[in-house]
Amino acid sequence: MNVDIAFDGNEYTHSGYSKNSLIEDKNYTLEYEKYVHFAFFTCYYISHIKGAKCTDTEVLAWYLKKFEHVVINSTKKVKRTYFNLINNLIQDKCVKAKLENNKRYLTHNEHFILWAWKRRALKFDRDQFNKF
Image 1 (cartoon, rainbow, N blue to C red):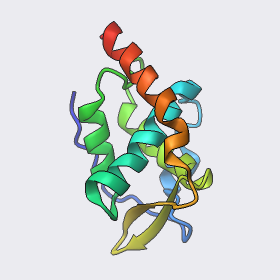
Image 2 (image 1 turned 120 degrees about the horizontal axis):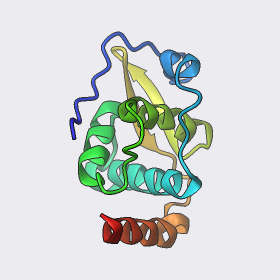
Image 3 (image 1 turned 45 degrees about the vertical axis):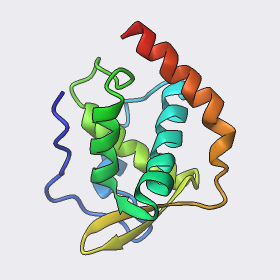
Image 4 (image 1 turned 90 degrees about the horizontal axis):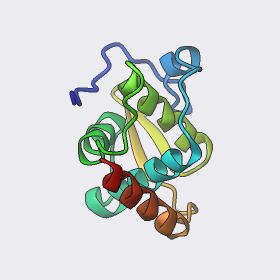
């Protein structure tokens, strides 16, 4: 799977949302369990592996490579679909976004209780890996 996700020309709103994803690809959705998995491991990566912050493209490259057994394969727009989920994470207050040099840096929102989704995310991961 190609994990090059640097979207040239991406623009962001002041709140950190990608302008492109606010308009495009509204019809690409994921089931709730995949979103929980993505949210948990994105926040885990930011807070426990990186320790502070990272760019949205960095965390997506890591996720798409590490969890290719979970990543949707039924759409040609895999990268865009998962990139759009970053907006959901911001809206759901799982992460905070800050713009620096036209890059969106994500930090874990300390009010998002990461461990609450741990069991659910790990069970889903195990089930998907067994299917893979």
